[in-house]
Amino acid sequence: MNSIVCRKEDIVEENNSSGMVKKEGNNVLTSAEVLAGMSHELRTHMNAVVAFSYLLNQNGCSSEERQEFANQILSSCEHIINLFDNFLDSLIIDGGNSKTESGGYSLDNIFDSLLSEFRETLRREKFKNLVLVTESQYSGASLEIICDTRKVAKIIRNLFQNAIQNTRSGYIKVGYYYRDGNITFYILDSGSGFQKSVEFLNTHNISESLRKFNDLYTAINLSLTRKLIDLMNGTIWAEKNGMNGTGIYFSIPAIAVNSANINDKNIPNTMMAI
View (cartoon, rainbow, N blue to C red):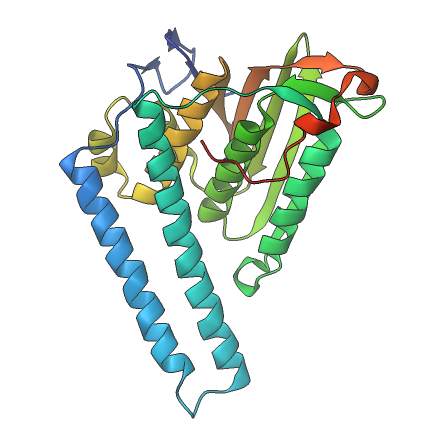
């Protein structure tokens, strides 16, 4: 099985076709190429918003066309927001201004909330050929854990976005298991983005990797994902899923506790902000 592992402050060699993975610090996102890419992405999607807004106001449009134009506008706006959120969050981490905040939470509640978001996303017309599959390999009552669930939720969202970017049809599978004081989440897809995902997960030179795969959105997405996992002393790795698909796994230390020990005031009701 092809596998690429990235652990904080380690140089890891896996016995696979991808060879040695070298990690050198937290990949700062301030090179001229990255900033030029950000400018290009912004202008491209803002132009799309302007163009589809113009078409939306034309009298000759059918209701189906208007819906399609509205969907395109929404998609471009979400792309811009996600890109800038991840870029700015990554810069905050690079500046040493982020910290881990642990609390006690019901894993089922966190997971169910994320899955509701993902199902809503996949209801859109352009994802009509994608199916969301979920599974849990934890047996027993609802698992209560202590960890930084805001960062965990951000990571899972990023990896889900990575999966739908690379999967036109088939499935995306999201699941987790708890073992020996670590919780491991995984996002598997039937797409074709394995080599690109491996490159951006393990690169120590984003500019160089962008010359191989000209995809700034994925580069920033996976760079931030890796940094968040590093902050929690976790590990992330990628494996091939079937012939062409991608499986991304990440494991972080998490303390399992009884629900009676959970303090309700620790449960956040806001989205993550690093």
